[in-house]
Length: 502
Image (cartoon, rainbow, N blue to C red; front, side, top):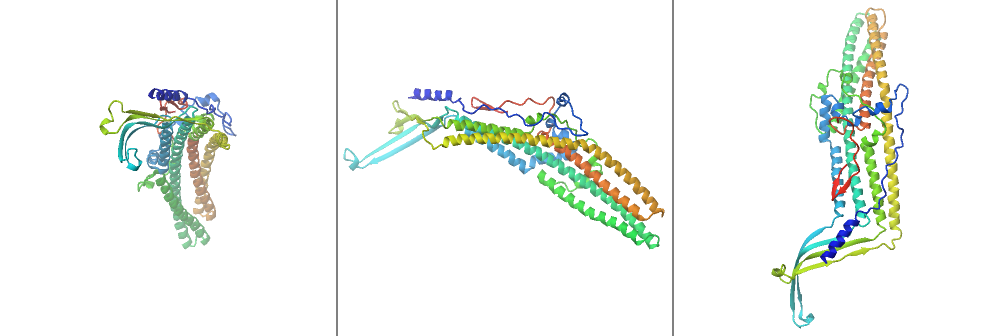
């Protein structure tokens, strides 16, 4: 019997390599070969775009975000953020599920030991007297091992594997999103701090003007209308200070939530001299690359493709349900009526219980299962194509916006300079008694508004660059990868029961 058992097990191992899953083919990307370029945008050639190394996705966040304070915040968020921790734990759970599915490909062998003691009353005994019997056994058992002739278990294993890789890419996408969220929250904090400083400086100037105007009013030189106009601007600045203080508090709370730890008490006060948003080298520039790069660099696209692979493998499991299942149960060991006789010659025992189950009538359940698997595969194809289109749209929008900000900021800087000159001249004319305070009021209000808009434009430009970094797949690694982008690895395989990861 042991030879028969080994022969059948060997046959099962040979046939278990069969799979009924359809060959996987990556769907064609439903997007153009180049990014759309509008007016003011220069369309690079394919060779020039391909020669820009490293691609944005391989620029580490330490290389892209060059502010030391921001680097510290991102590092803290990656270490402490609970959402990212949950995503990582989901990956570990998927890996454990994959190991469970993989275990079904190999037989489960259990050690067994038992004792049976029985008393038979005399009325039931052929000898007419009560008897007592006892049996002891020790052995190894093979319990309900399914020989995977048609790849059902193998397909389920592959489904779990692809799900694991999909969740791993989801965790990477969560990290990229977290990095961009921290960066945008920090930039917003810088902008609000700069707006608060601007408002305080404006308030100080307006208070000085208010005191001068009140003195002139007391001497009968200025009118009450002049005084109230100056006071209007001063009260507006006081109100804005309260608004920006509130924004700074919420900005700080957002950063503390993202980083998972309290910020230092003097953090807001240490943000710099008010030129943080336009200082050189705060963020690195980015190459756009080609749309085809996204297929390998965006983790959400790769996650969608792994989900598609999982749905494809499920078709193999659904097909295998139409074919017979062979299950083996066996055992080998020793048995004796006494403990000291367990290991004596002639005490060996064995049992072998093969079984086969052939589907004959299931009211269409197997066919419905196959139809469902195919529909779910088609759904995943659509989800994969949607992920590509969404990624393409995000990058195209970010590139289109980036092309306009530099020109807009230069125009706004010129407007601020013009408003500064207009305010200076109007103030000189008012102090010389040539004009009323109305011209000074109008020019000071225009200057303050243009300065605020310039800060917000600089914030928008930097935020756009952060978004572009995110949508191009950047932020998954801390350090920039040197040299050309790595060739995408081959699909995972099993060699001697060991997982070869991508």
